[in-house]
Length: 181
Image (cartoon, rainbow, N blue to C red; front, side, top):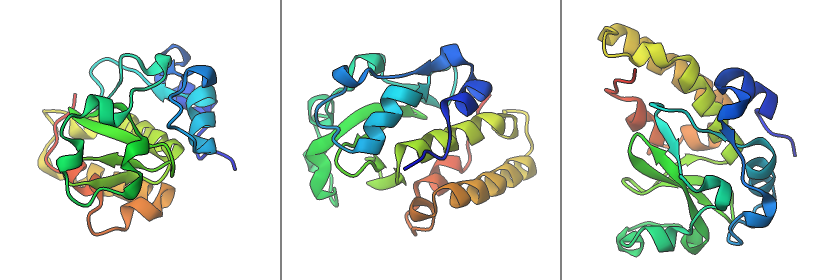
């Protein structure tokens, strides 16, 4: 299966020196999903200062298990049965984002919502956010932010309809009323 975004495309957007990969031999053994393992070891995720996504500091060392980093993990309702295979990828707007090592889906805990159905789709959404970031700048009028949100949601729906067509779509809330520089 191919990825929806390549390392070259991400490097063109973020800079090759800003992509962090996890060597396969260091990847947490809870990540058994083949596409996720391949994406993390071959393509990587962006690591930029002052960006809405902040990867784990130790991303290149293999990703910690969610059960080891999130003490209150099992107090949340409606968690998938595969929660024990989750690893923490980093923070999106200061909220933890987890990779389900079994299914490859990405999750957040606040609303127990699926962020994206696959890690490459998450990276593609991050690329779009980076490209449209000026639409969320502090000085942007609300009509510009709304238009940017509409464009992004349409792009996200094309990239990952499985995650974005759900009533509890994570991105609806994540993009609402945000200011990013």
